[in-house]
Image (tube, rainbow, N blue to C red; front, side, top):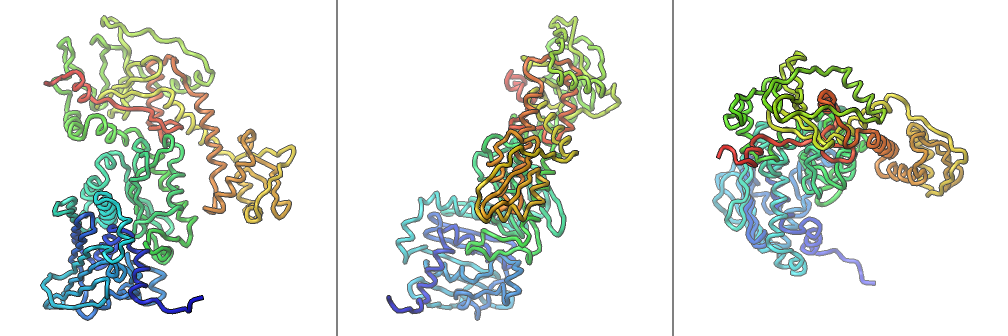
Length: 636
């Protein structure tokens, strides 16, 4: 066996560079984090050939003193922590003291800096070959500029693993996007091959922050996002979460920051998935930009060299806080929250802005009826009192008793007698509700029902245009939420098994089931340990007596091992309730009266998560007046 010897400083730095410097984007991340830690208000990033030829990062921070320049490029040298106490409550982005040393070992690095106290700047140059620092005077304003040239020039094996220029620059751009989202108080400029790609000014106000997010994540995200801000038990969660209708096929629009540091954490991902569980369509992913603020002493950032992973002291508390905050935010979404995104998707932002300005006043001239009669404005809470032929329609007032009769008739499974269809000759018309008769001066978000299409869709009229509601999907969500509420108001009942089910598990799972016996009992599961690796299931939730009990218990134990808690029973119970709601909801070809349709619309406006059915499908959409005009070439 060869004798043991110390590694040379150069080889040790190159080994460390393998963890810290994976590609040009890794260099950009470390240098931008250093700039932000220095208190910079402006960070300029310039790259050439995807960052392989040149990476230049300039900031206007506090700078580095001339005497500290050689030490700045040494391993384990940093100004951000001094003692173990500092490490246990890190407030800066960087703290390891390895980044500059690792970068300089695989590139040609030049660092130029000047502090406020110095009259002139100084420059230090290092090449990966000999690692000898050369210091010389230079001209530079207060701040620091770091140039990294010919990345991996002395490690060709690493360089050949780099991708195409465009791919590497995409990673650099994503890195800058994350840093720009983490620090709204700083401005960022990104140039690639002398072309400006991003130019972001500091964003102090909420409007400026939304503009920055719109430029980095897309304007559609902001149009379909809900702002949240919640505090509890020393935690604060704020940011933007997209509506379930704005889901993605990939998890490529998910940004989560802990004390300004972007992270990827399984605990956080699980809490978010749990909050979106019954509102997302098949295998879709939510979009969000969220910021968690915690006491630095309660989170360990010294987990991985890239600092993308953290460990919370009380992970269960953080998980519950994130889940409950997002769950409540999604539950509070109502149809009027969907309108901004729905209108923007319908016919574009510019047209939406014009339409919004017009609808705030009156009906445009191009919306006059064909017979020349003046149109009755439906704004300000007044529904039109005219039928298809322009004749006045009788007023009807739907009350709570109409809603009760409607749902009682649905429960019986019968089909009500369809009303007489409206005549196109003008002698008969479908009656429309008038909010004036109810004493309201505001138009409901989903407008007023006017007709039913093919026994499937409810057509409603609002000031913005025509609203189309999927009758079955909407009623399915309403029924599902009522069943969940009724179940929550009473304890989950258990049913003893006639013959206890024996289950072979590992010793760890058996000990876990024994330790969490009370928690499992609250879930309706009575599990007894009868051997070192054997469990006996004696009771299961009454609602789930037909489910796969063995698989359910295994999933619950798996969740307890990974997350310290399990919502598996609740998930399966809600899945069963969703199936019952689906089969118990109004079916196609059920003819509804106008009061019944309006009852459905009003219940949608008052029901949580009514924008989607239990399976994640949208329950309604809007066709704007501008879009209808475009279809019929009006106003041209």
